Length: 191
Ligand SMILES: Cc1cn([C@H]2C[C@H](O)[C@@H](COP(=O)(O)OP(=O)(O)O[C@H]3O[C@H](C)C(=O)[C@H](O)[C@H]3O)O2)c(=O)[nH]c1=O
Image (tube, rainbow, N blue to C red):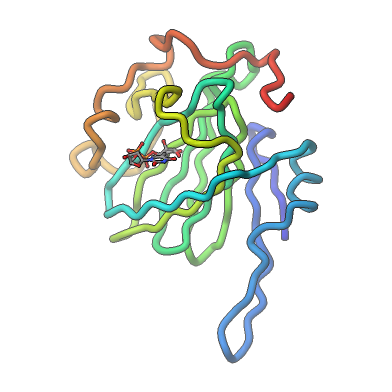
């Protein structure tokens, strides 16, 4: 299992080892000990989620406010997505910067997105099944979002706006600079 820190080092790509044989394959998809050694602190996942989406569906950019902020460990078990994580911690040297990673059922890559980041993905295949762990329970009253087409972020989603399919909620998200509240880089959201 490989752990690769990204250009925003809080964000980590995990590449499990796949063991193939004549029957198919086996892989350890999560190891608490190796994961926490790579992340550098305790992360207690409490909820598993799964969503299935058609080509062009864009879910995001979402986060939950503290004290319900969520870390996410995301992967694709069918199809392919472009996954995006945006640093929204005020005071961070990477504030407003983002990481994109293509996650597919073929490359088996996973992405760890810490608390303090907004997250979203767009489906590149005919359908994609997205499976992920979070370390805080769903809190609808704490659910917040940022516009996928925020000009400050200028995210390249690879598809044209005409190809994108969004929820009504995600067509009305504010830009990052319009958020009344988000995260501070100086706060330890894992304490
Ligand atoms: C997130 C969530 C949703 N729901 C219910 C609420 C709605 O009835 C339905 C769809 O919710 P929503 O439109 O918020 O789902 P997504 O657009 O996939 O939201 C997710 O999209 C991006 C990619 C994220 O990173 C977050 O995990 C999450 O915000 O599932 C639940 O019951 N539990 C949950 O944890």
